[in-house]
Structures are given as structure tokens and as C-alpha cells.
Image (cartoon, rainbow, N blue to C red; front, side, top):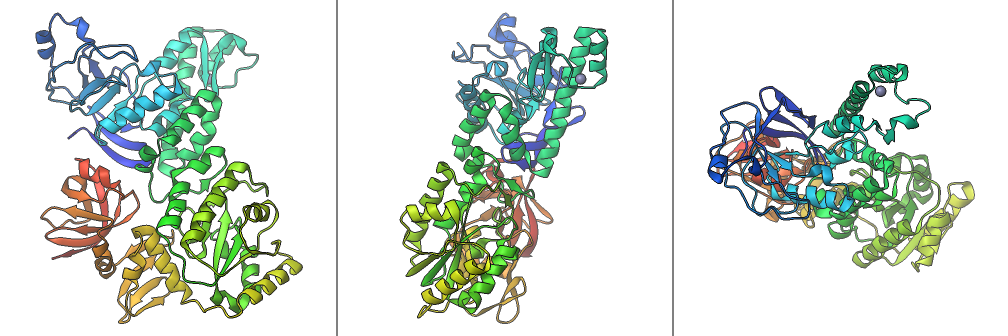
Length: 578
Ligand SMILES: [Zn+2]
């Protein structure tokens, strides 16, 4: 447990927190020797007894305890016994050989500056992060540059320093966000800071270059902190890693650590998801959405399936093309089910079009589908059609999208897609033919609530929430007597009432179990006894304890709630004493 560090905000593995040293430091931060005292290596001491006795006086600086140095791929020859410290404590960990890390507030990655190989970098940071408690800070010394800083923070590092850029200045290495260049190679300096002015005038070269390099790393940190606040860091790093092939490789390797990233990715972001790069296809938000459509969602029983293309405007229904489709389909809409095909999300059932990220993504539209996108779409479509059976399929898709589905052998009526009069007539005719003798579907809005409940709380949630006689009123679903069960929020999630939560309780999903008390306002992590492992920040959760039953919105992942000793676990919305 730590008294000196608390995570306040998260954007994937990146966090913003507070480190309580003499002055509280808001992380991610650049720290220096002003913030810590360092005992040095074990070899600076005469004996183990001396090391054990080296425990520093009570201080508000971070005390970095003695450590055993060793090369990156060599196991340290011996281990040190733990030392108690009265103030904030920091321990140096070998990036690859840590049996059981001793308790600390801050962990330092030993030899971080040598982690140049992308695979080493990912293995080291993911490995260390998985071994230390989530409510402790991670410090990577002598590693950050303006070029790699954003990626390091995205990986889950909280503390960095300017050691490397200062050292580089003495080798005449000029740092920019776009990489490092030898000072002599410039015809024109790309920066107009006061230090660069001195470099142009040929004054105090070394000091001026230190000044410039440090300023660039500070500027980059400020930008990254803002990205974490705005929840746009992933979009930024997908661009920023392009500065070197090594950083791009590191992002691709990190994306393969799916469990690590998934466990830290919120249910919902406030920002628009830009799927601009090849890496976007592997984002957790994309794979999670597709996985839920294929495993939690069940389409309403329908004889006819209509495949439609996506639209730039979201949710699709308010776009011009989808309004035209709706007009052409007319009253037959009650006899068919609509599925939207899109990249990178693959399949969006109409009932889920307001869910994140279906209502919040943007993708460069060229009309071309590359091989990877095609394979991903067809793979999802196969599973979908195995889970949900239809008698007839109509494809109102055009160009390469139609060709992809056709070549994959999907047995459908192909209209050729489009939104001009002739195209819409073809759609209208195909729908009329297919819907002859088709069974009528149930209430569309009830189906939407059912689909969303299954999407957020797992298979079966929709049936429990909508059991018996219920009615849809505006954006709410109510019991017959008018009591609210759940409401759809403007960001496309579901807000439960206490009665709604009671209906879902038997599923035993998304439940946070608390101790013997009645929480008020926010539920803090130490009050959590157990939490469903699959809870992610932003999820609607059910709170259950001996004295209380309630509903709230998760502020951290379920596994984090269970192990954290500080921080808000759940923001409460309704709580009832029992
Ligand atoms: Zn400059």
C-alpha cells in the first residue's frame, strides 16, 4: 500500500496522478535530483550490514534505496534485504529479473536508458508493470526524448527525467519531436526558442543546446498531459511513433500485448476515435466492440437481413444516405434487420449504432478495402451469420465492399448499392420481394434496449432487464407502473436505476462488493472487497454490500479496485441503505 501516490486519470495504460513528495508532483512528470536522494549501488557500501543501516532519515524526498547493478540480460548476482523508510520509498528493479518486488511507492526501471531494442522495451515495461501494484509510480531514468516521450507515457511510465537530452547536448545532438539531428547538419534551425537564438548567434553553444533540448522535452510533456486529459493519446502516438521504425515496431509489439492494454482501456472515451493507421485495426476499442457483437449480442429474430454501408455522419441514422435508405425501405422496416458494414469496426447492428465507438469514429474513406480490412470483415461476418440465421440477405453495398462480400460467397441479392433514384428503386424492389411472407419484428426501441443491455452487461442481460410488461418512453425504459428501469445516456451507454440493477443482479456481472458500510458520493478503493475483473473505467456497475445496494460509474478497472489502496473506485449515482 502506498500513502504517497494516487492515480487520478487514465487513458489506456497512460495515467495522470499525484506523487506526494515535499511538493505534490502531478504525474506524468520530469523529475530531477531535487526530488529524490539516491543511496547508490550496493558496491558503494562495505558490507550488507552497512546497506541495512543505510536507511535514510525521515524526509519528504523520494528515497531511492541501494541496488545491485547488472547488465540488461544478466541476472543480478545477489539480492538485498528490504529496508524500512519513513517517507516515500523508491526501489530499483532489474527490468527482466524480479522475483517478488519489495513494497515501494515508486519503482525505478534499472538500465532503462539501455532499452533501445523495441522488444526489450515492451517486455521490460509490461513485465514490470504486471509485477508491481497499479497504485505505485514507475520511473524510467535516462530514457526520455521529445521523440519517444509520448510513447513511454502511453506504455504506463509515470516519471521520466531530462538526463538523456542533457547528455546528448554535450554530443551536439539537437532534439526535436521529430527525432534527433547533429547540430552541425542544419542549414536552418527549426526552433525559434531563446536558446536557439543563441545557437544562431554562435554564443554559449553547449549551454544553449542543453536549454533547447530541455525545453523541447518539457513542451512535449505538457502536450502529452493535455492528450491524456482529453483522452486522445492513442491517436497522437499512432502519429508520433512514425518518427523512427523502432518506435513504430514498439507500438506494434505493444498491441500484441492485448491483455495488458485491454485491462487498462476504458469502456468509453470522450474523444472521436480516428482510425487513420494500420495499427487502428488492432485497437482495443475496435476488437472489444467486434468481440461483443459476436459473443454478447443476439440479433432479433428476423427472416430478412439487410446489409448497408456506413456513413460519415454518426449515428448512421441521421446521415443523408441512411435517411434515404429508410425512405426506400418504408414500412418494410418492420420485417427486416439492418446490419452496417464498416471499417475498422466490421459489423454494427442498427440497435448498437449509438454505442461507443460506433457513434464516435472517423476513418479516411477512399472506397478501397485493403486485404487486412477485407479479411477482418469477412471473418466477423462468418461468425455473425453462424450465430444469427436469416432466410434471405439483401446487400445494398457498392464497389469494393460489395465485391468483398460477394467474393466471400455470401448468398445474397446484390443491388449494387448507391443513393441515386435508380439505386434506391433497386433497394426498394429487393426489400419488397424479400419481405414477402416474412414475419413481423417486435418493437424496434425495445430491441435497441435489449441489444445495449447485452452489449454492456453480457448475454442474458437484455431478457432480465426487459422481462414482463415494460414500456419505452422517450430515452427511458419503464415498468408498467412508470418506474424507470434504465435510461439511454447521450453518449450511448445505459444508466441503471436501482430497480434495473436489481433485475440484473442475478447475472453476477459488473458487481462491486463492498464492506459493511454505506458509501456516500464516491466509493474509494479501500472500501472495495471484490470487483468483477471485467469492469473497465466508464462501466455502469452494481454496488453490493451488507448495508448498501447501489449503482455507479466505475472510475478504474475491476482488478485495480480490488488491489488499490487509494483513489476513487466508483462514482455513486444511486445508493440505498438495506
Ligand atoms: Zn530551440
